[in-house]
Amino acid sequence: MGSHVRISFRLHDPDVVSVPLKFAGVVGYRCGGDMAELPPSLSGRTVLNFTTTVSTDLKIAFIGDSISEQFAQAFDATVIGDGYERTRLALTYRNGRNKENVHNCFSQAITLVDHRYSDDGKVLDTRYFRPPESPVAPGTSDALPHSVGAFDAAVLRVPHGWMKIEQITRERIVEAINLANEHLGATTIIVATLPLNNNVVTPADWEGIAKINQMIRDIARDWEQSAPGKVRHVLVQEFGNFTSQILWMNSKHIGLTNASTPDFAKRGWELPCADFFLKRVSAVTFWYPSASAVCAGPTFPTVNNDQKEVEDCERSRISRDGTHWGSSFQVLVAEASGPCGQYAA
Image (cartoon, rainbow, N blue to C red):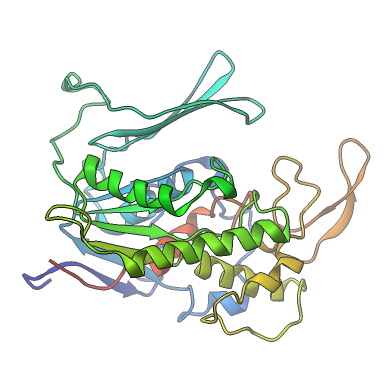
C-alpha cells in the first residue's frame, strides 16, 4: 500500500486463495457440505465466486448483535494471514447458566451490550456497561495483548430483532453514532442497512425496514462534523440492498417469482418482493425462515414429528435460519458489501 492508503483489498481465484472460514464461529450458522451449491446466477466468478484479502493498519470495531459478530469474523479472516491466527483475541462469549442463555458482546475497549434471555428466546434484561478497569491476569484466556486506544472506524449494525421497527428512530441511530465516537474514539462510522430477516413478518414490516434504510442513507448524506475529534464521516454499508438482490436471484431460481429482473438501483425496488420474500418454510418452527433465504429448490409437502403436514425444502448455503448468513456465504457478503476500496487517511 502507498503511504497515504490505510486499507486496500485484492480479489482472488478461490482455487488459489480459498474462502477464509477460519474464524466462522457458531456451528448452527455454518452452511457447508450438507447444503446445496449456490444457483448459477450467483456462483459465477464475477458474481460471488471469488475470495478477498484485505491489507490495513486501521483499527476497526464492529458494534451490534450476532450479525455484527459474523461481520467481524469474516473481516478478521480476510485480514489475518496464515500463521498469524494466534494474534486474534475474540472476546465474544456465550454460555449457559441456570437454564438461561447469556450473550455478551465485547470489544477490547468497552463492553457494549449484555443480553440475558431464557430458553424460549424471551429477553430477560439488557445491560450496557464498561469492563473492569483493572487488567486481567497475564496468561489467562481473557488476557489482552495490548491496549487498543482509539479506533479509527466502527461498523455499526442496528440490532433489529432486539429492537422493534418502531423503536428504531433517527434520534437513536444518531445517538449510537455519537456513542461509538465517545466510547471508542472512532471518527468514521459505517452504518449497515437492514436486510430481510425472520422478524419481518408482514408487508408493513418490510416497508418499515425500507424506511429505516432510507433514514440511514439520509443521516449519512446530511452528516456534518460538529467539532474536532467528533464523527467526521458517516458511510453506508448497503447490506440490505445487497442481500435483497441475493434473495431475489435465489427466489427466481427456486420458482418463487417469474418476474423480470428489477432495477436494483431504484429506490424501493424490493418492496413488491414481499409477495414472495415473506413465504415461510413451515417445517422449521423455530423462526419460520423465509424460503428465499434457506431453500435451494421449491418447497414440498411433508409430515413433521407431530404428524402435521408442513412445507419443507432442500437447504441453501445462503442461510441456515433466515437471519444469520452461512459461513462461506457470509464471508462473501462481508467482502462484497462492506467498506471496501481504498481508504485514505
